[in-house]
Image (cartoon, rainbow, N blue to C red):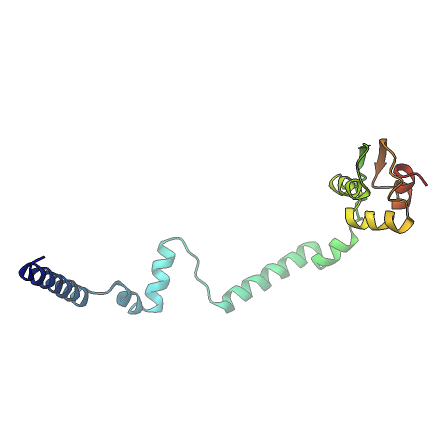
Length: 160
């Protein structure tokens, strides 16, 4: 580049930066208008857009009134009602497990966990290991359910 071309380029950058700065400084900022709104104006704008504006005290009073109405309608605390309801029986899950040669006690535990028969496949494996029968896994098809104890499942699947 020639020196004149370089000077022209630098001058163009200077003019563009100056023009941008002037526009930036002279243009009214959109954030300054939001700071100038009063609380009433902000509340009016929010309500016009469909929002409900309440103070914390108004919300607390409304919640207390709703709770008092619920207690009056039922005649007792809602917590008491939940405690009086009979507990539902746990569902019993049943599965058929196909044990093939090469499977390990860990594999069996994972399958039983996925079938929701045991809570933890690893804990089941530790129980099998604790009984010393992890190497006695017998191939075959076995039916087990979540109503059985882990000892019963081990007796069905592993050779004692």
